[in-house]
Length: 419
Ligand SMILES: [Zn+2]
Figure 1 (cartoon, helix red, strand yellow):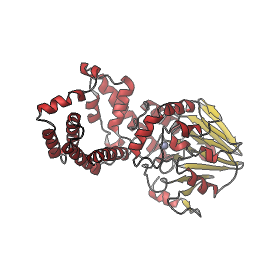
Figure 2 (cartoon, protein in one colour):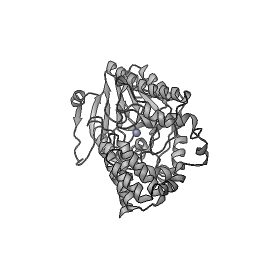
Figure 3 (cartoon, helix red, strand yellow):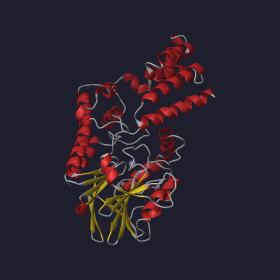
Figure 4 (cartoon, helix red, strand yellow):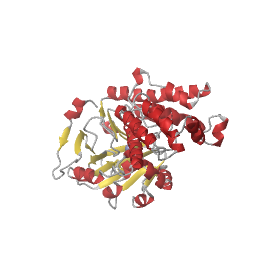
């Protein structure tokens, strides 16, 4: 959505909410959106979904529920309508969309999700310790905002389970409003899109946002299939929506604008997928393809959240796994040889000095050198200082929020060891 059309939205101030409160956008047709991000441009750094409320002639339907912002979203939306909540529809099982279910659910409320939703919850719960650690690093600050995906089992145990699971499509009539719910895998295998035919409105969840998608997320994920995204975006495009409501960021209006943006997004994903597969078949290794594959200008959708290079690796590894055909890879990683290389180079002091010299001009090379020096001496102060400098340099130039999260986490870890 353009800035002017954002400004044209009726923005309702909700009494009683004093700080960082969500503003509620009246999107027309009975659709209301609460989101910390949705009205301030296209910022999707905060791992919180928008919460949508659709008012019908017989109660409201909630689509996605956010996480730590959920109480504020609920307060703001309930100030507009306190009608019974007939259904909660979850676009997918990530915690930043499901955290507020218990707040909204009333005894007669139907919670609706795709049939793969429970399996996805089980997967994230099984790896709860892993994801808690990785989320805390990626999203920083011990994750005061909460873990967007893979919360601990305890948090999940208190979250109500869906009442309705469907396979390909599900139709829900509430009052005079029809909701058609379509399975549209992409961000997750259980991902769905909610389509309101009478409003030509598609709630597209996380299959579209203002950046190349996180086909691979650094906190860890099973493969997110590029071709699923392509098929799901085609399914939404075929509806010819006039309103597309992503769960992060701003709404898109107008059939032509929607067609243009979703088509470009789809084509960018298809391009990266096809270039990766072509390179694999030509015998190129993953490192080469991560460097070689970039989006052509007409498909450049930005990389403020997902990164093309990580997606290339995600697609590559998703198809064939970790073995690269190099016989030494069968026995582990090159790190085993670092202490021997550092000794040959004159010891950790010499390697750390070289890292310091390169920190400003070749920060990633400097970073790898500190890996080597620290493999020989994990508390080497010169190597840790060089690491801090290299990470600061990378942080200053990074425009990707996930990358910045990890650079900041690496910086904290190195500074901690220097204390
Ligand atoms: Zn999300």
